[in-house]
Amino acid sequence: MTEDPRWGPWATALWSVAIMMAFVLIQAIFFGMYVASRTKGASTAEIEQAALQLRNDGDVIALATLVTTVLCVPLVFAVIRLKRDARLEAYLPIALPPNPVLVRWFVYTAIFLFASDMLTVMTGQPVVPDFMKQAYTSAESKPLLWFSLIVAAPVFEETLFRGFMISGFSRSWLGYSGAVLLTAAAWAAIHFQYDLYGIITVFAFGIFLGTARVKTGSLATPYLIHAIANAVATIEAALSATVT
Image (cartoon, rainbow, N blue to C red; front, side, top):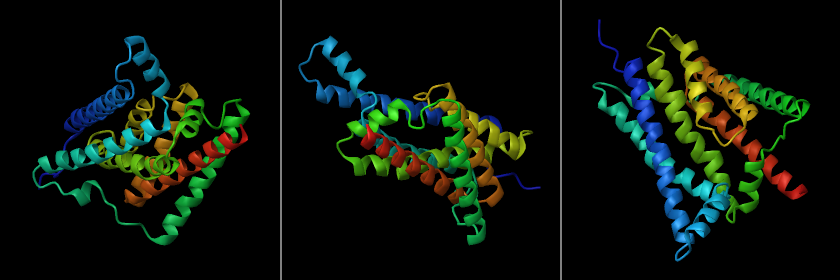
């Protein structure tokens, strides 16, 4: 019996925490440098005020997302390579599923997004969160924000959560079902910019993305779904900004 060339569940958990800590640290360093560049010669009180104002700034969000994607995706690759005989294509299968399968999941995505928005409206929650409105209206470079949200963010998040983490956790007693739930919870936990309702929605969407990854056997499927969902959310933010 040959050894499975993937990290086991405990190693997967430790490496995942390390990568997420690197993600948070990189964003914190970038944010600190950005605030410092905008507040040269300012007092401590002025710097603190600027930090509060820039927290949901669209340009900051876009640039921070791009920086963390560029640095953290290779970090995931490096961790996979550290495991002897591990293959990137086994961890991160990016081949597209057959067209009928892909179309079916796009239909499921449309249904999920429509149902999610309807539930949001019925429960009296805003379809576009306040921080998203602030990010869109404050962004001086709208194309950069669109690119970071629709392309860059899904690349890193799907590589780590639906790629590396599901591949590792599915080796344990959790199986694929438990791995999908665990990664959805971890993914929701990093979206601390949302309120409780938003985090629950992210968790549900994480389950949907994980299921798509497992059922189609391709990481390309959740990536495309994630990109579509972020595009819809960005369009809603743009429309909201136009109305207000």
